[in-house]
Length: 231
Image 1 (cartoon, rainbow, N blue to C red):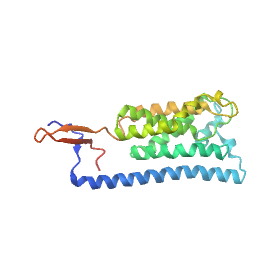
Image 2 (cartoon, rainbow, N blue to C red; image 1 turned 90 degrees about the horizontal axis):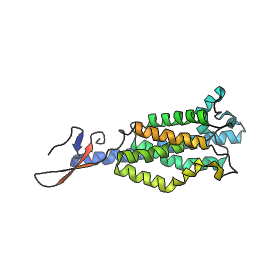
Image 3 (cartoon, helix red, strand yellow; image 1 turned 120 degrees about the vertical axis):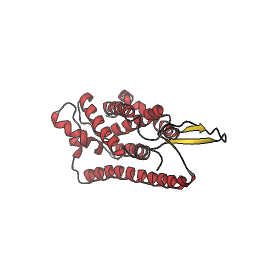
């Protein structure tokens, strides 16, 4: 039986350790996602209650003064409906990054945050751009694209749920369908491009597709996993 160096077997005495690790990872992913979204709500409420007009500090495309908006844009929202529409998908998508890509989650989110904002600054139309929808699009396209590249069962199942729940976000590329709303389709496009690019960049990170090997001695199938998955 030939097995590559990066493949190990799950031994019976490792199963409990693996389950405990998965349980902690699951809870931590939920907690971190909730904290990030809660920060958005706190900032919105402070801005709204005290009338601080922070939305004026959003992103201004191709304006040097507007470069700071790359960092402020995701934290600013026009109204509570705008914030709520971003909060639920953001919770679901943040969880996926913290759970499936826990080793690189912070870096993936930082690059998503910066790259989507910078690209919006480059291609955006005149006006102040606010909202976390660029990050929502980036994470959604990242998850779907990388699940296709990796072909890992759990990741693909989760991405199918995302497509089922939020597949309608593709209409966000066509602002003419919503003439009564000011939609930053450039922010959506910037997020999608960012997510796809990061998926290719991090295609070797995260969960690994399971491989089954035939035991020639007893004709039983043995499950092999990448050594990074075993803890």
